Amino acid sequence: MPLSKLLIASLLLSFLLFHLLQADQTVQAQTQGSLVQQIDCNAACGARCRLASRQRMCHRACGTCCRRCNCVPPGTAGNQEVCPCYASLTTHGGRRKCP
Image (cartoon, rainbow, N blue to C red; front, top):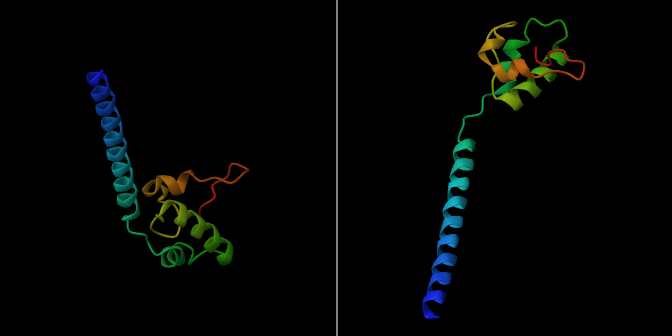
């Protein structure tokens, strides 16, 4: 009988320890993800949209894409292969969302 109580206690302790280690790893992974440096979307989109004929629409779309992807391709057009996330965002109609 004392052996079974010791076995149950050790199992409970090991499950608790496992759970605490897993929770610690999750917190570390979330902390490392938040350490990624955010780019200045206003400046990046200002450069991207400087030649656009519809400045406000370009800035609005670019800002949304920049906040989601944390990336804006260089230049005023094209170069979307540099930011795959930016290039993959589409509207409900299936057109590219990001300028």
